[in-house]
Amino acid sequence: MKDETFNDFRMLLTCKTIAEDLALHIKELQQVNPVWTEGFSNELLNRVDSAFDYYLGLESNRRIEDVRNKLNHIQAQALRAIAFLKTRIDIAYAFNERKKNEVLNKLGFRQYLQAVQDKDTTALLDILSRIHENLSDSIRKDLIKNPSDEAFLMRITQFATRLRKANLSQQSLMATKKAIAENALKTYRELVYTLLEISQMATSYYKKDPQKASMFDYSPELMKYLSSSTRIN
Image 1 (cartoon, one colour):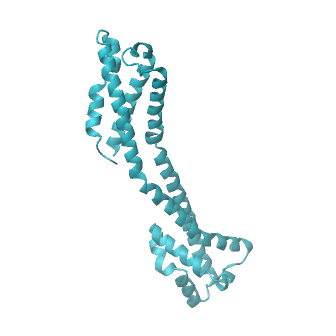
Image 2 (cartoon, rainbow, N blue to C red):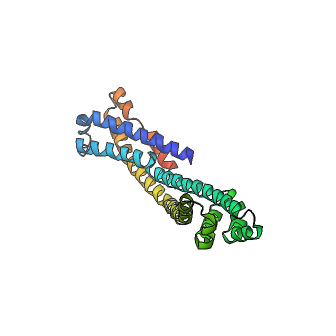
Image 3 (cartoon, rainbow, N blue to C red):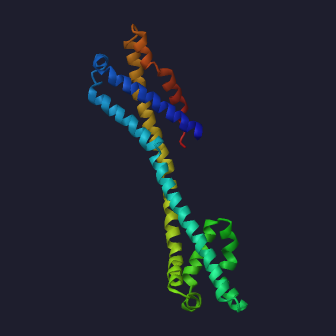
């Protein structure tokens, strides 16, 4: 995938080079194809820049990364909260081992804590859900010693919902990745066909001016890209 991304990047640079040279010589090259107006040239440059910004500026990947960072942040907060809750339970029931074990079991610590410590997201959701469902008023009363404890318990019961939403957002974005890749490939190929035509026609037009002809002589590179761009990431 890294090689494919690099090839896409190199191809877009080639397209941008051709498009920029077309813009520089638009008055002359209009004689080749009357469709090549300044408006056409500007639109073409915008299409290339948009492909860079959206697909290789990685707008979609930035969105996925933002959601992933949010998910990781919530997970880290939840892990700290769970560790703190475990400590509060150990302290609150320090002289009542039976009650402590009962509370730890009821809140899912016995079943899920090890997996949670191993960074298992499903186990983290499970234990947070158990805490949300089973943190009864009587347990709260035992754990709350000051107003900050009460606020903490309120926050920890909300982590399950926050984490579930963030996890669903990530899954939703990842599910669209194939569609994004298909759109990217379609966009790339349309650009390459357009720039290939410009490259071939401009090179032919400037055949008596090798220096200018060389500015547009990218047909082999574009053809090579087309022959290798049948994949969908």
